Figure 1 (cartoon, rainbow, N blue to C red):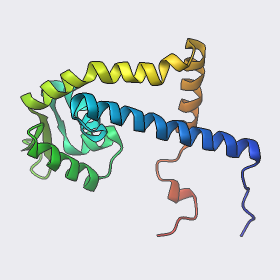
Figure 2: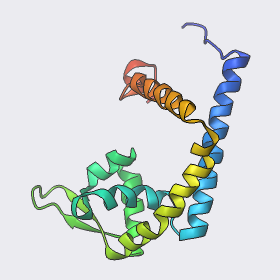
Figure 3: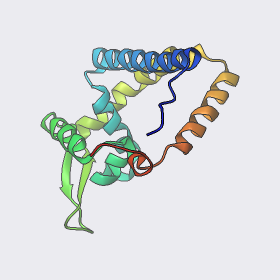
Length: 161
């Protein structure tokens, strides 16, 4: 077994700064979203792709992929949202094994009401802290990082089962 390549002080500071920024940004966005609309970040994460989908409906697996969630998490969140009338499940007419998630009128009103303030929060807490040049640089850097992450990280590393 090879010796681990520990982070040096500069790398450790950068990694911690990234983690802190991500955590605090998500906390602030979640808090503001709940306070101003009653929607959680998870609600918003699912309502958004449904709101821009044709006829407000997506195949369950496609909705899960769009937010990067596993089937179990998606199923539980959709169940919670169904109870509140934000979405409903439907059978997939083209594939009896598949299911669809549809945005209800209540869900449409909720996302339409929440979106303007959420976008304002994203602008306030994120974009306004960076110049346009920094935004472009950051987008390029993040795209490069994402492009190098394998689809299945355990396929190319020693992962515990």
